[in-house]
Length: 330
Image 1: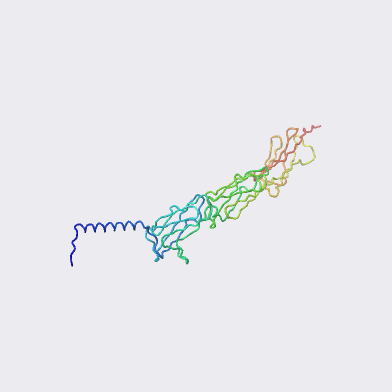
Image 2: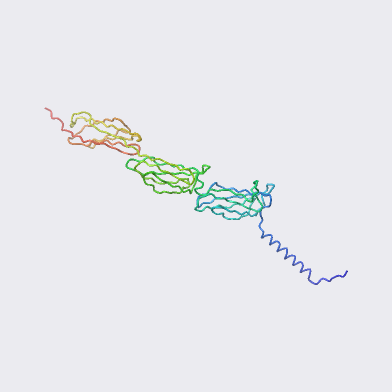
C-alpha cells in the first residue's frame, strides 16, 4: 500500500468545514418551529361564553402528549377565527397552555375559533387536526330579554317614564354591549336603539299621555313588552248641606264625596278651602267627608275641595256660596 502524504493544514480545514456544517444545521433547526407531536391532544376554551361588540375575551389552548403530560414549553400554536380577529394569531405554550385574545368588531354573529399545532388533534373519532369552539359576538349571545317601566303609569295630562330592557345569555348572565331596539304603540321614545350598559340594561324614555305598549328586541331573543297605563283621576263632588241660606255667625256644613275609580291610586289627602282664608285637611280619606265652618263676613265665597292621590295627581271641585248678613234681632 502506498501512503499518501497529507497536505499541510488539511486537518484544520476539515475541522473548520465540520464546524460550519454543525452551526448551519443548528441554525436550520432553530428556524423550524416546535409543534405538537403525533398522538398529542389539543383542547380550546374561552373565558366567557360571549363577547360584546368591540370587546375581547381570552382563549386558552391546552396541548398534552399521549401520556397526558404537557408539551414542551415553546410549542407553537396557531389560531384562526371566522369573525373578529385573534391577537396574536400565533403564540407559544407555557406549561402546556397558549393564551390569546378574541377581539370582536362591530359585527354581531357567531365566531368559530380553531387552534392548531403540528399533529395535535381534538381527540375526536374523526381525528381532525386542531380544536374548535364557537363564541357568540354581540347580539348573537342574546337569549332572553325582559323589559319594565318606571313608573308603569302616567296621569291623563301626560308624563315621561323610563323603559328599561335587560338582556341575558343562555346561562342567565347579564350582557353588555348588546344593541336593543324599541318601538311603541303610542307616545314618543327618546331613542329607537340603545346598547346595554355594564348592568345589562338598555334605557330609553317614553313620553305619553295615553296608554302605550313598548316592545324591546335584541338579537335572536324573543321580544318582550311592557304596558304603560293612564292613571284615572279620583272624582269629587261638593255641596252645602241643608236648604237654608248661610248667614254670618251661623255654622255652614259642606259635604264632599270622593270616589277612587277603577285603575286609580289611593287618596293621599283631601283639603277643603272655605273661601275666606281658612281651610281644613282630612288626610287619606274617601267616600263622604263633611266639614262645618262659620263665616265672619257676608258676601260671595268660593269653596273648593282638592283631592291628591298617591301618584301626586290632583283633582278639585269648587262651588260659590252667598253668605247673608246676620239676622237683625227684633
